[in-house]
Image 1 (cartoon, helix red, strand yellow):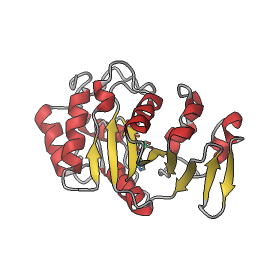
Image 2 (cartoon, rainbow, N blue to C red):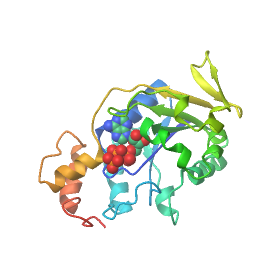
Image 3 (cartoon, rainbow, N blue to C red):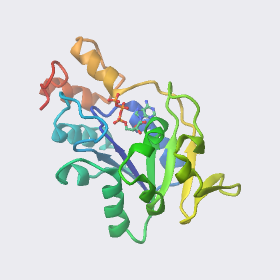
Length: 219
Ligand code: ATP
């Protein structure tokens, strides 16, 4: 099977995430995209972060009707910070017969040099870097530290960069959907509508649980 692994805070999940996953799934003929909400994201330690269980439930509600999507609670169940490397190692070990594709936005990709042992990620899975409005040009290998860049060369047949380990690094331009989770949280806090920014089930869940209305309310 070809499996996409899509990590994020998903606080909350929105149409930008869902459309990204759908376009990647289609473009790479993936059998499934697994959404993996982070428990304690190393890069986003907000004081008022929403409880992991609420974020997990919102992902479940959002993907329920798409048989090509599923959710994994591995990061939420693992104690401590959520490092992508640990997650990818677990998947690589458990799914030796599957092809794994790690999906991340270009904003996250640009930060990869600061991730724990990031060079060890590349041999574990293929990587698909996706565009995001307001995040500048997609591309480029130039976004990662030189030491890592040297281990890739362009494969014109696959239209991707090939790592010395054999895995590929792809860049995919998506339909621009300028939605961010922070904008949604700010809108709820200001009492504004978030209709059509998130699936209706997620909107209802946020309302029911009183999420994002004030700092620390969701914990
Ligand atoms: P926040 O606003 O809190 O920073 P976010 O909207 O960026 O949150 P995350 O959960 O951090 O959401 O995003 C997970 C992944 O989804 C990241 O790789 C990010 O680049 C990507 N992503 C988020 N929103 C969009 C969007 N509107 N279009 C394309 N990619 C997106």
